[in-house]
Image: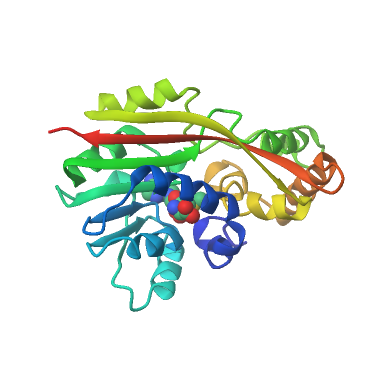
Length: 268
Ligand SMILES: C[S@@+](CC[C@H](N)C(=O)[O-])C[C@H]1O[C@@H](n2cnc3c(N)ncnc32)[C@H](O)[C@@H]1O
């Protein structure tokens, strides 16, 4: 059975990733990239944001992501744009004073060792360099998804397998906690807020949004210690789709995401 992870969803990713894209616009505004700055896009995925960064600066632009499939797509989509892409995780980066700006959109929640990753970012930045992150936050990061997963937890067809699911994500509950984490790693935090963002979509669109990120956790063999079957995967998807249909009022779902926006500066 084929593994459901970011490499698997890479080809479809840009069509599905509408919520990640709109949140990234807010992050870009907060970061105010200047036209000679060297920028690292951390957890760049297929590079849609990396290409936008390319249009903002004449400096060096680098995209890093541990998913080979994502980087393959990013390289394919960025031909002739003078962007460097590398298959690497945030925890394995070894850049030293190489960038003025690091941007990390909708990827921080996936970091296995957030503190190690933040320390690597600190080392990768030059003095007064800044990092901006946007990521889903709080255990209730998306109440719509969580409500749908409650059905999976209870249904006879899925409950036994789902009991073996180990959530891969890293969430903190308050903006203050995110701030403290970055301060612990040496940064001065100049902005930290959790915003609840609501957008309206058809149930099918919500399922596509679910398929652009959350599915790489919930249906990824790596996060279960029992073997996933085709039956489990299709019952899971069917239930989640049904839940989004039930959430719709007059054909539209109010999709809520809690998102942290944080900007921090390297002082020394
Ligand atoms: C939802 S996608 C976001 C991609 C892109 N930044 C965007 O805004 O569309 C999350 C990305 O984080 C990457 N990721 C997961 N773990 C990571 C890690 N430890 N370090 C860096 N990136 C990671 C995934 O491979 C995936 O491409």
